[in-house]
Length: 210
View 1 (cartoon, one colour):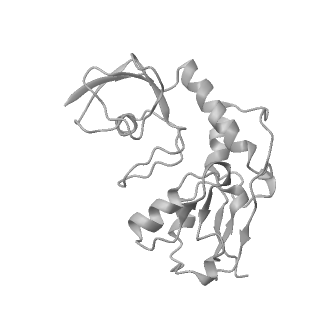
View 2 (cartoon, rainbow, N blue to C red):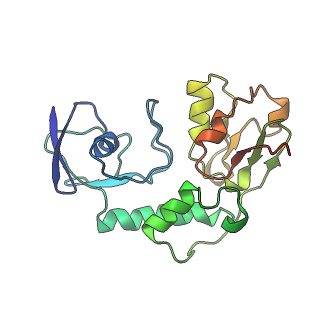
């Protein structure tokens, strides 16, 4: 067993455990978006960053394994400031239409904003291209609400084995979905709905047949 300290609490976990998993096992909350249990972690969202004493930079807790004697802080001032900036950058390219969104009051992005107490939007700028794809008989994809967490990519590729949902392009032009000119309704999508279940925001939803 490995002995570590998280937020001044000494705990024991098995070797090979990540900081995120160690915290979760001991009911210590670390905000996250890209993390999914029992799959390969990618550490892409960076919301789960923590401060490790002696480390030069903050570390993504979902991909950083514990080490003997490690001292971790999940809510230090440095962590809060960085997490807030990451969150605000996500919001800078996200529609501020929570009241009309189908995920209102059941949205992980909204929940995190309440947790870190965001009261203003400091970053405004260019907006990515919005695509609403309703061609599928069961799923609607709204790219304007996507936060690029890649959960849908993980479930489509690693769990369902369909391989349809993938990141395309780079930087600000990145989008998640089928290829750029392909619609869900014309793709190999099996309409399993697993991408909708894991999406933390309103980017993917079941089509209302009523």
